[in-house]
Length: 253
Ligand SMILES: NC(=O)c1ccc[n+]([C@@H]2O[C@H](COP(=O)([O-])OP(=O)(O)OC[C@H]3O[C@@H](n4cnc5c(N)ncnc54)[C@H](OP(=O)(O)O)[C@@H]3O)[C@@H](O)[C@H]2O)c1
Image (cartoon, rainbow, N blue to C red):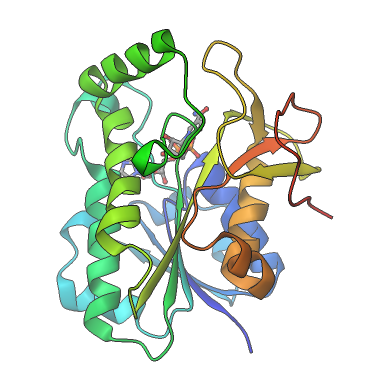
């Protein structure tokens, strides 16, 4: 059966790669974007793409639910635009508000099978309950300052906390995974490794190709085994060859 995926943030750097890979896999994609003309013509012309030009945060509930109805998965590649206004201006809680809206919209539809909510996040986000290997005192202090002063860092953590604690593991309608890439790089899909917890410190960052993040997001949305392995978790994704302290648990073909 063809999968149907709702994509938000699809005009971004990773979002566009995700959109392209989803369409190449034959997935039916609904993309809510602020500006349809940002989509490359060859993607916009795909018969499998429904592009919806709208502001995700102000879309009426009923309209959002209409776009969510019948979706097997929702992928969010939303991120704050890297400008002074994008980082410090409203909406400071873009990712959290969007994540909550999408989850509440799915719950309101009461789907027969749980819908997968897959959130692109960052290695600056930690797992709740101090489940990640402890960072050094200096790193913890620096991240605390970052979250206090830089809205996107706080926003990404709150969105992940909402999924881990607000949705949790027993929700009948929503299942979730939070993907945590390290420093984002250009490049084609290559081998990558997935880790349960953090493998690089902020003073010795690793790297993750955006194409590899897109590949993982697509796998999680469409592959039963990948979803069984990572639902309810916050996988860290690093390019293969990156100095990792944990054994890789999944590689791209
Ligand atoms: N940069 C890094 O090295 C890095 C590393 C790890 C993780 N991350 C995280 O990865 C995520 C995605 O990163 P990226 O670089 O691929 O993102 P990006 O290129 O900046 O794209 C951001 C997307 O979010 C949309 N967006 C921004 N503000 C919005 C708003 N107010 N309403 C609706 N949509 C909005 C943008 O739409 P428009 O096209 O309309 O602006 C775009 O589609 C971010 O959460 C980031 O924190 C980044």
